[in-house]
Length: 504
Image (cartoon, rainbow, N blue to C red; front, side):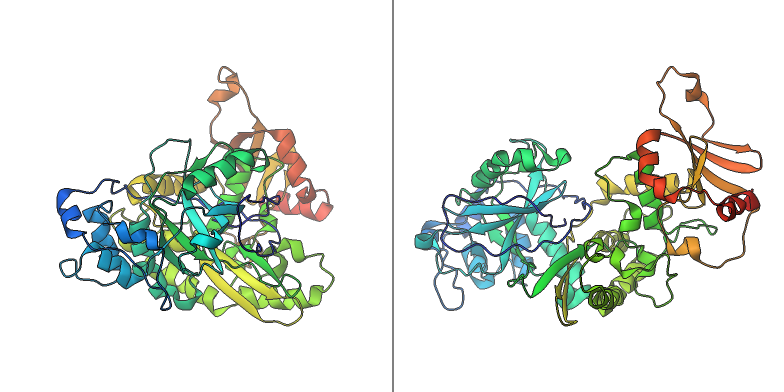
C-alpha cells in the first residue's frame, strides 16, 4: 500500500511533536490478499501453558507494567505456533509469555491515539500515532508507523492473519531482498483501545478520503504491524518519492508479438475500463521495462516517470540524475532477478499450488519508497507492501486478466480508434518503440464505441472482427471521457496517418 498526501489531521491526546510530513505526489493503490483468520479465543491447554507474567524488556527497560497480569490465554495455539516459528523457538520448550519476552514484541499502551492517516489501500491503512506520556511503558516507537488491515464495513469479520503474513515476510521476502526490505514487526494491540480510536478518526475525516475508500474501517484485531517511517525527518533537506516497479520483465505467457509489456498492457486495459478524471495516466507511471536498463528508448525511459511531480522542479538536472540512479539501483536489479527466478511460466500456465509463483506475484505488487536529498545524490531506498497473495482467492483473477490482455488486444494493438479518430496508446511502453521486424501485416486496433444498453442491437457485435484490412478489438467505454484523457495522443499529422495506413 502506497502513502498518499492527506489533509492535516490532529489528535486530541498527544504527548510528542508530530513528525513533519513530506509526501511528494501520490501513487496507485496496491491490493492485499489475506489468509484465513486463526480465531480470537484460546483453549484450555493454551491457557494452562500461558501462566507466566508478560514483561517485555526493550533496550534494558521494562515494558508496560499492565502486562504483568496478562496470562496470554487469548493467543490461540495456532497463533502461538506462528509466533514461536517467527523467533525460531521450539514450541514445546517455552510458555507463551516467554515467547513474547524473548522476541521483544512491543505492545501499544491504552491511550494511544492516531495523529493522521498517512495512506490507505483497499485492504490496509497506515497511521502516524502517539502514545500517552504517562503510559509509554518503556517502548521506543520513534520512526515507526502503524499498519492495520481494513474491512468493508464496521463489524465485518477480519480475515487478515497478521502472524501468518509476518511469517511469510520474514521467511520468503526478506531473505531475497535483504536490507532493502522495509522494516516490519508485529505489535500487540489488545486492550489498547487503538482500533476504536483509528475508526473514530476515519469517521471524522471520511469526507476527505478517496471515494472508493469512504466507509471502510479497521477490522477488530489483537495484532498489528509497526513499519519503518520513510518520511524524511528533515523535509528541507530531503523528499520522499514512491512508485511501483511492477512486472520488471515481460510476462512469460505474453504473446510473442506483444508490443506492450504486461504492466503497460494492464494500464491500457484499466484506462479503457475506467476513463475517470482522477485516474493517473499510464505515461505518468514508469514502464517497468525501462527500469534497470541503459538501453530504454528515450520516448519510454524518462526518469521523471518515476516521480512526475519533480518534472517541473527548479533543479531538473539534479533530479534527473538521481532518478536515473534509482531506476538502475541494485535493489531494482535484484527485484527483477527474483521475479524472473520465481516465475518461468506466467499466469496462463503457472499452477496455484506453486509457492514460487505466489512469491513472484507478491514481488510484482510492492512499493518502492525512496528518500532523495535535495542537494546531493544520496538516496535511501526501501521496498514494502509484501502481503502474501492467497492463490485460492487470487489465481483465477490473475489468469483471467492475462487472457483478457491477450484476447482483447491490449498486448498487441498499436492504435486506438475512438469515435472515428485514431490515437496512439498513452502507455509509452519500451516495447512500443523497440526495433523489430513486423510479424503481421494486419494493423491491430482497439476500437472504442459508446457504451450501450443491454437491449441495444450493438450488444451482439463481435468482440474481434476484420474490417478493411484491420483487426478490430471492439470495446465499449465512455467515449467523451476517454477522448478527453487521450487527446494529447491524437494522430493528426501526415506521418502518423501514414504509419497507420502502412500497417493496414
